[in-house]
Image (cartoon, rainbow, N blue to C red):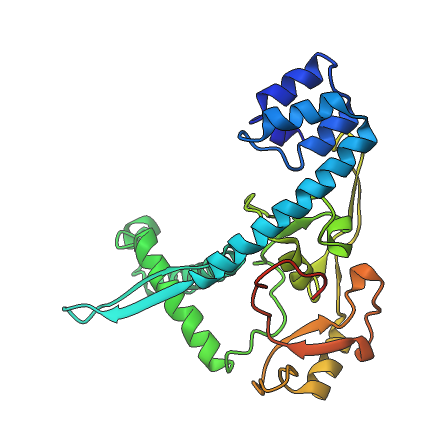
Length: 295
C-alpha cells in the first residue's frame, strides 16, 4: 500500500488527513491508478469500508477482463527473429512475455557465472610465473559478449539434456510474490508480481506455483513481515520422479512430447492434495483468451 500511495497523491493526502480509513485506502490502492484515483477517492468518501470493498472487487473483475485481453495480446505479440547477417553473424531480436523473459535472464545469469568460473580457472592455470592475474585479464569480454557466450551455453546445455527443463535450479530462480488468497481465487484482489515488480496475471502465478519452491510469509496489517517459513517444494522430489515415470511426457491429449512439468489437477491452493492421483505431467498452457478460473 505504501508503494502504491507514492504515485497516488490524492489518496495519500486523504489518508494523512484522516478523511479515509486505513481499510478503505488499503482496498482502493489495489486497483487505483493515476487516471482512476479521483473517481475512486469519491467512492471512498461516499461509502462504508464494506461498500468500498465490494466496489473494488467488482472493479477488479473488470480489470481482470482487461488484463486477460492484454495478456492475450502480449502472448500473440511474442516473437524471436533469427537471421544471418551479411558477414555471417547471426542476429537475434525478440519480445518475450514477462515471466518467460525472467526465466531467460536467470538462465543467462547462471550461464555467465559458469563461464566466468571456467575462464578464471583456465587463466590461473595458464598464467606464466611472475605475471600478475590482473594483467592476464586485460582481454576480459564485455557484458554484451558475455551475454552472447552465455546464450550459446544455454543452447548447448538444452540440446545436451534433450530440452527437458526438469526441476528448476535452486539458486537461479524466477521469484514471484503472490498473496495466498490470489492463489486460491484469481478473482480476489491482491499481489501477483515478479521480483522486479512486473505484474503477472494471477492465473500465471497459479500455474507457476504448481511445481515450485515455496516460502510462506506472514505480514502484519502494516506490512511488516512477522513470520517466514522454511522453503519447501510443492511437489516433493520422490513424488516428481514417480510422476515422470508414470506419465513419461506431456499428458495433454494429442501432445505426445517426451517432457513436461508437474501440474495439479485441482490446485493445492484450493485444497487439492499433492498426490500422484491429483498430478499430471504437461507443458505450460498458453494464456487464455479471456478470464478463466483454475488451471
